[in-house]
Length: 123
Image (cartoon, rainbow, N blue to C red; front, side):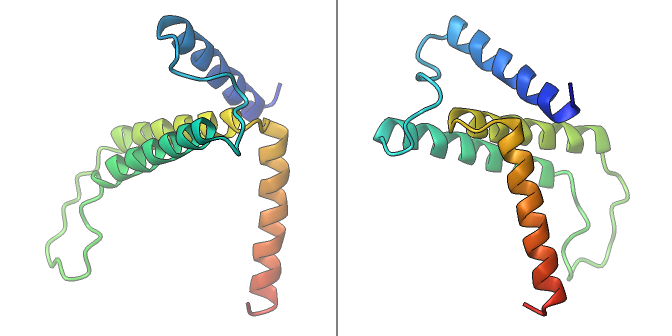
């Protein structure tokens, strides 16, 4: 089993356990992306992932161009943990939408080719 497949498997197991412990936390997945309930779940998962990325960014202290002093302290383990939290929500979004790890991988490869072509062709 590839690592991406394992990550999807673990997330699916968590979703199943969460639904077992808190019924109604996830509607039947995959959701109907054309339905209001399906779109609400997808939006909620996406926003939670974005919120986790903002939490990760709070660990970065030296990004302001106008700040003259630097803070060398970065809690890298906490920074990475917040990114993992974001990935978990994004994986949940992908799974809830009915996509697999193979779908994600193929879309990633297709997009990677497209952005390289853009760079080559001075997009």
